[in-house]
Length: 603
Image 1 (cartoon, helix red, strand yellow):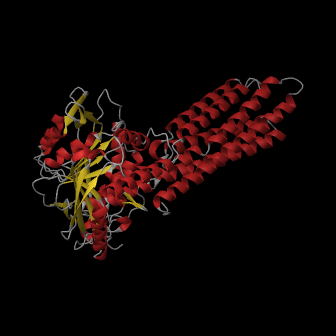
Image 2 (tube, one colour; image 1 turned 30 degrees about the vertical axis):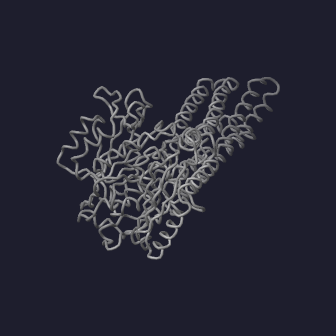
Image 3 (cartoon, one colour; image 1 turned 135 degrees about the vertical axis):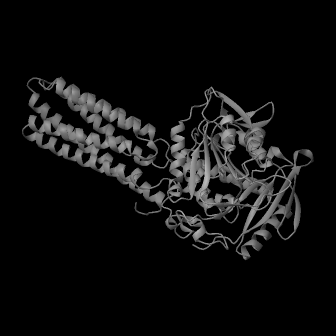
């Protein structure tokens, strides 16, 4: 893949307070041309609150994905039209044309120091039909502050060293710290295996422990914080929530965090990953923290202005750190990282990351590859990241990418295989029950119970190995149903009528499982929701058939027993075939979802 751009021109848009509630805009092009204009926010504070609630809170939204994207396009278009108009529009379009003519990108740099209240607007949604500017490597959107000087790129030898911090104090929505660590580890595993990235974790997420870790002699290149943000109404500033030695919440301002990190000269990037509850209004709690860190000479900060889902965070981290390990400028690396979020089927979250920069070059690292692991690297540019001009491809190479959101392999192949195995076994059980309906009952029924138990075990493995750990409840329910039904059938097997209670228990569990699948797969734009939801109706139908069959057996125990037993076996046969059909469909759907994420590549 050839380089997408040869470098960046910088279009600076300075916005300062003006009279009458409006703002003055000064646009300065790379060639020195400038223009003056005005900006008035296209939304009121209440309208921005409503927009954030409809679009920003990914896990609690009420509208569908199409509604969200339409709202985002409309908002971004109104924001673009309010900012890029009249003479400012002329400078913008001429700068874009000039940059394009030299195969360069145009960095849209927003200087908002003179109007800090505008930090709350999601500028990353700037939209000029047919595209969002921030999604393209040609037009990255960054926010910068008026600071005294820029810092030169630091020469580093790979691996890129990342310090992870997960904070979940009492009194806030509890985070699964192990799961959060696992998610970041999974996102970076390919780079770790190639020797490009080294990930370590802060033992305890306290300010004192962070001070101890920063004081150690080794370098830290990136601080990756996962936790909660809040907004202090009294100080009108954002805070991050660390833990006290007793595990309670410890509010840490951007000033305090910046002061703690200021002597870690190797630190070039801080990522603030807001978890659930990070933003519930127009106020972005991390904006104040991010700007404080930039003032303390941290060259770049990426903060999540909205809550971000695990799928989106994994895809974003994988792509962003790949670009940084290649030595890409942070503003160039963040554009494909936004597209990786789209590739993870979380397109409405692409604008969640906000990039704050000090003035000057956005190259954070002058990467020199170490000899160790260099044999594992292939030519740079695979998977959407181009090598920098003048940089050795060998020095910035990464392994070929196979997907931006979920790494292929056992995470996807195992649940596909076990779904097919379960479907095949249930088909066999159905065939046995069909034969049993016309022949010897007891012996074939005993064989069917054994095979059905093996089929259920296959489905338990299927749910335990599904990606994103979204099937654990299903595994538990299937185990409970198997144990309950087999136990009752074994205990009451001497009485054909009473043994039906075991089948009734099985039918009830199937209906419960089907209901849970519908509920668990309700988020239709999640990566694997379709395959999770696919068997639901079939499993409910199977449970209903079992309940009907055994209800008939219990109700008619005299002269009609032969006909009722025949009908019972026939309905049990239909139940088995229904479960088999459901999981065959689920396996095919899961394979298609994998293909969508990996771009059609085989595992």
